[in-house]
Length: 243
Image (spheres, rainbow, N blue to C red):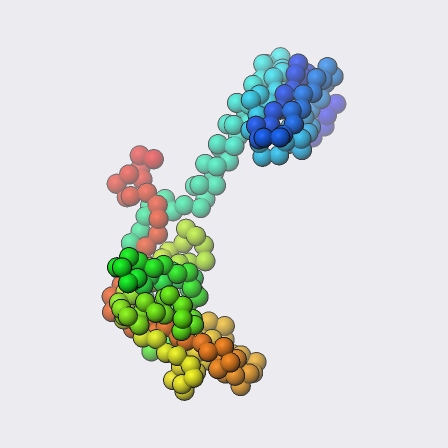
């Protein structure tokens, strides 16, 4: 008896073949009754993550079973369940006012900053950003970084504000950038506010200020002039019912 286990199967052959260069081929011939789960566990251990031409063929309860088809079907079902759990059913695009925008951006710090290269092509930089007390987007950098050089030459920049979850809501914001360089009092105070709006109070602000002076940091500060809808991915509303 196999209480609590998968129904026993009498196997005629089990074949698992690696397809990567230098890999091994494992063939198991079993004439005894064994649980399917045990055989599959063995095969996964022999060749993890590698596709096989044929997993197993046998009978269970008098029914011929194609193991490869069964495993493929189970994986596809699992992917479908995961997809339905992680993707919104219907895409959304909500137009919001400035106050709602600031509230949305203030709690999200994963940002893609888009500046313009000298040849006119976009430069995209993943950055950590915050929002200061005047509703400006602030980004810490160094004076010789490409994004700082680009922003000095062309102040028109855009940011894409992401949620922590990859499929969460996002928004594009356009604005005018200014670059503040240490060692100036304005840049130092702005870097203090940058840290505070992202991480809260520093245990030693004097130490932090000294570190900013020593590192010669800069701050990109973006005044927002327009923004798109707060959006999420998903099916277009007119196609959701047919998917």
